[in-house]
Image 1 (spheres, rainbow, N blue to C red):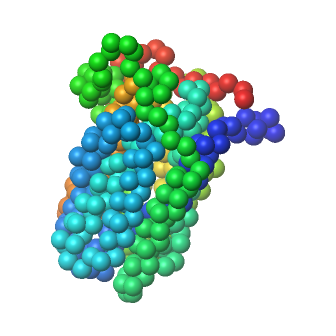
Image 2 (tube, helix red, strand yellow; image 1 turned 30 degrees about the vertical axis):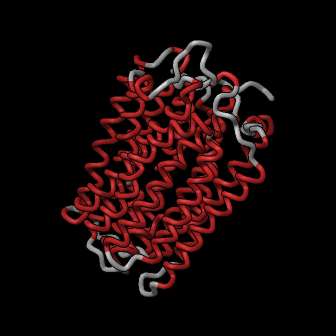
Image 3 (spheres, rainbow, N blue to C red; image 1 turned 180 degrees about the vertical axis):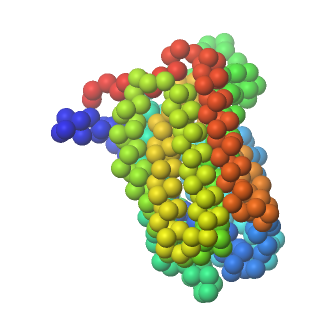
Length: 420
């Protein structure tokens, strides 16, 4: 048992660990806000649920433009500088939510947030990949999933205690905390994490080789298939976290504090299970793991639908939803062990920023479409919305098995980490 526990230690480089610390702090700030944005817009500011969903979706929609723009910038001037810019913009955007009183205020804040998110993920992912040896990348991105979810879960727990729909000023407090968390990450990044030159080492074009472009990335069929599959999983899976709080509150009478606990349960599962799941994934086929993820998430959304449609309310509904979100977290662990390291393995080193930008685009498309579509679906059929998501997750599971044949043999399995 001791040997097995020691084997879970990813032994990541110190610079990677420092970067992950900054990510933990910013994720905490996001967690304070994330479960309550729709509740704030709809229940506090009186904005219709459909329009509120569009405001949240604007964040992802703007990221669709900002993300691809950031890719060449990361390749040219480095992830370190672009990440610094992203953190400043994110602080302004999330802090601006406190000033929302009319729908157009929300759209402005969400637009700024979208620019920041579009720059953030390609820059951070490129920096993590560049700072990690290849056989440690799956552990690096798994640890990223741990710290991000730990931050979000702890933040949601704190946000659930602070935020109250009957007291609008409490939401100003949570948005201020979120903005401050991005600035704290900026200080850590600038003082303690070195920049990695975008043309260093094997990322440099060979002599006489033309500079790469997005055309090269778009011609990479296996990679684009992986991006498409991930878009489906984010749309039908991850984006459900944007919709669950308002569904739980309005359909089952779950309090803001209990919603924070539900998110925290999901976090605890990820924090405890991510490294063991990542270790177990070593040497195993990645697309089979994603197929398992799709089936698991489908079952979770069916359970959410049954809770809302059964008339169960209050604490009982909160417990059942927490169990479902705990199981959902196991699927997130599988995703964390597979998706990002697969992208890094498929990428050409000289175009890593562009590959990471298009990979991030799959998240942005999913998170843009999820709240936009889901907000209107919730107005028409609250419980039926989750059955739609479950069906799409099952489709994703089938596609994962079909797409495996497109992957090069070297990318089909997670590598086995070499002893430090």
